[in-house]
Image 1 (cartoon, rainbow, N blue to C red):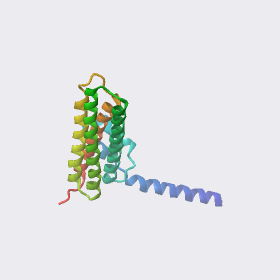
Image 2: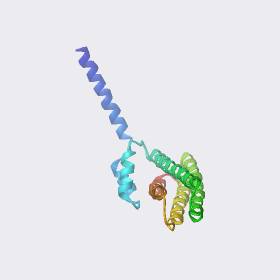
Image 3: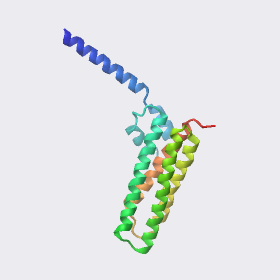
Image 4: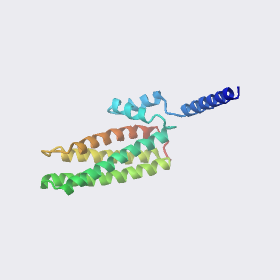
Length: 177
């Protein structure tokens, strides 16, 4: 009997935690609203579904910026590795230009985090737009090369998609007066 009561208490507590936890998560309707405004709805839904435990839109914005920053850092390191490994002068120039773009991209993302933390959705939007431009410019620089590193191209495309999600989210955040 005592074991049965403990099991019931445990199950009741677990149900309460699940109910409380799920009531604060981003809803599928909110995810659809966000993804409908991006250029790649399928990518957006896959990304957001993997992050659906975010308790609110600000947390989702941070999670999206975290993923974008991680990919930008990974791309920067890959570009450094390519240059250090030795490439032809034309490719080296293109990849060095990409490194410069990614250095700016990471700085813009750092500032986007600051804007998010201070409650400035508009400021976040501006910095995420600048980060997106950096990835886009890098793609323009390397697409003219004969042999292009696929990880740089794929990461740059992914960053553009993640920035697109972050831009939509930033438009849902409060505007600082």
